Image (cartoon, rainbow, N blue to C red; front, side):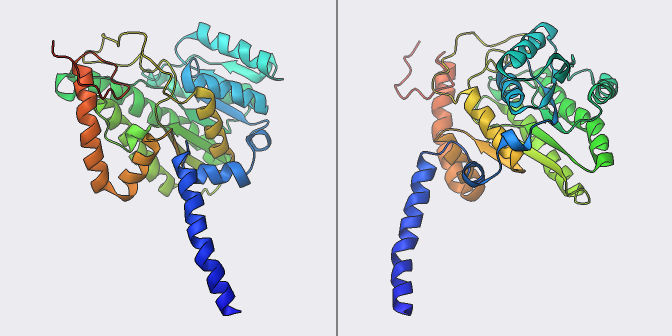
Length: 336
């Protein structure tokens, strides 16, 4: 009998390893999310009726999350600077789901105006009675070389991405602590794990978010029903590159970057909802090879440094040659 068990294990263990390897090769999210999608709770059940406040809801991931949450039956607070775009998102939420006019609140918010956060939070609570989930999605990216980037750009990135997010969270969290339940979901980036070329200030702001919310999570052990979750998406189809900082605060990227190689916002949004429904503390969401880089940085940093240097050199060369630095062009750039 023992020999039969040992023989079965002899075959099953390599088979299991092969299956997991194949899953990883074709995966676009971490193993926790893959498991949650197959065996966990469904967003349509867990998020129905909850009040969700989304910053950066006028475009990109925030906009997509609004549509998917509306389809789940969530009640929404949509925030960004552009009220006209928020109203457009609200209208589409009502068109693509069963939510009504009173289920979606448009609440203009500028993450740089931190003194307004208390009144904005009070307005959200007054409208719905409570806030179940805060999704910190607002922010901007960056594409410029570190030494060529103005200190004003670094200031702006930290003010917007880090301090704005932290300040808003500090206004909403006491409300959740009083109720004993709630979720703070912060959209960070794989750049919060990986030191990516051309994103020095952006990456620093996302590393800061990772550190802050990891500390905050450890301070809330007396509130087990409050989830602190960070989302680390890789390249996603959105306007974040078009609106990103460059070497000067008032200079933006050239329009028309190719985004076909990036993950769709709908796919990314679905993974985020799966993670929220299953209380995931951190989510890695990206196509390969970026997802593999996350695991390397976590478990094999020496290899990560080697590969980052190799690919980073080509990215910087492409950037200096005026090529699309969002993709790896392995043909040698032509000399000017």
